Image (cartoon, rainbow over all chains, first blue to last red; front, side):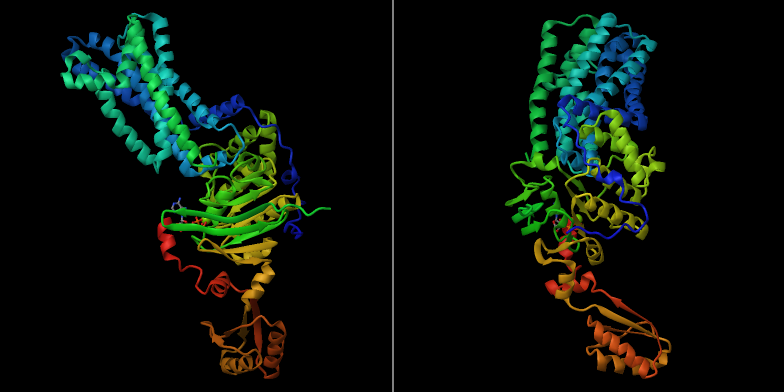
Length: 278
Length: 325
Ligand SMILES: Nc1ncnc2c1ncn2[C@@H]1O[C@H](COP(=O)(O)OP(=O)(O)OP(=O)(O)O)[C@@H](O)[C@H]1O
Ligand SMILES: [Mg+2]
């Protein structure tokens, strides 16, 4: 039945191709960890993407503090205290956007098909990528916070407040990441995900309280700003780093995270499944 | 011994993309063991069929059993024993070759050290040891292909889908891939391979299905297929171009049919697969004092097979091509 033509070179049938030992199917944790490892390798091989994610937040910090700070808050130092928490949120959002772009790259390049053709715990593909992102956020937040401290940022909430803010931002980014996953699953190319992300993000960042207090805006804009999840994240981070967080502010921030997660995680999983059997 | 269940059995598989019926009612029986060739021109529906069978694409209609499992109800059981090497390399370009194989080894359940050892073993077999530490984006097309196949056999699968594994490879790399396929088959893997080349199907496949516009138009052994198509072509090269007229008369008399004057002034060709008559013709030429400097029997080309089976040339499907772009 089978082809018996000998190999054209003298090498014997490679033993390696006859090995049929199949280990046990790995569990969810192990699968997730393997995909996290893959994400870490990408940071190692392509650190430029991480560096470039600092640049915009750093530029915004410098420009807004020294150019507009005096006008906006009376003194550059006062404005920096107000701006830094917003910049931390922006830093995380800028990196977060790559979640969708890299998922889409995986799909268009075909590696996603290879993963889908394996008998593995599938949510691990996305969960591992999100955990890899968590490391990126941490690195970027440390860098941007250090820059802030250097420029004169003095968070009243102390070390604990800053750590709390970092933890909260991890949660926020995890929830927001599902929005980009959904975009990455729907759109045709990494470029279009990139375009959509920028088109959505910039208005969202400006229509929030990152740069100015909501109370200084006209009424109709306040309505928009107050439903923007970024606003609630910024308020929470400002409260945590400043040591002034109220239970109400924190609740709203958690609600914003919860809404993002409840809408976009099921949507992503639905899109993910509809691309193949089961 | 009871009869072995076929590796793949499909009935009425259909997949449409909008107006295009990419796969239009495919019935296939792929026996267990050996190489099954899936032959067809661009846009015939080869990739779409394979992607459905590899559980990556939901069929619109029809049923299939793969490795004894129902395609729609038990895809995970199929995935556990099957691998696909897609038409375009599906490896991670940012990672190195070694990292790609370790990644897959880990996902299949190997411990870290075992995954690394298995990766090294495969890199060696596929001649990629030197490039092991390089990012795949710096690999050549042939290296990528080989890594892609290596990635599919980290655990040797019972069923391996190879979608045009040699398209775009130089002859040496192509032969290497052929050797790999033979070694896998010798180890008991069933290989379903798509190709646009009759020659490849002829070299590797035990059976071949020819697909055109989403339908199977012929099925059988490569020999049966070629016989159903009929003739190959005999090319004769003369020592002296001045004798071409005489030679033409001899060939027409002995072999019959239309003798074609090739662009090369020394050469003639005539369609025939009757070896006896070709032999006689060569003897007659020498008797007539016409010196033959060489002759060659060419198999029917894919174009000829297609023309014979479908009544249209293989590359005529302009519309399908545009849809693909
Ligand atoms: N995702 C898709 N969306 C729309 N049309 C598609 C899609 N995939 C394939 N097609 C169309 O279906 C038909 C069959 O395509 P398929 O890729 O299966 O052919 P193929 O035999 O693999 O061709 P090739 O030799 O070029 O790889 C073509 O007309 C193609 O344009
Ligand atoms: Mg194809």
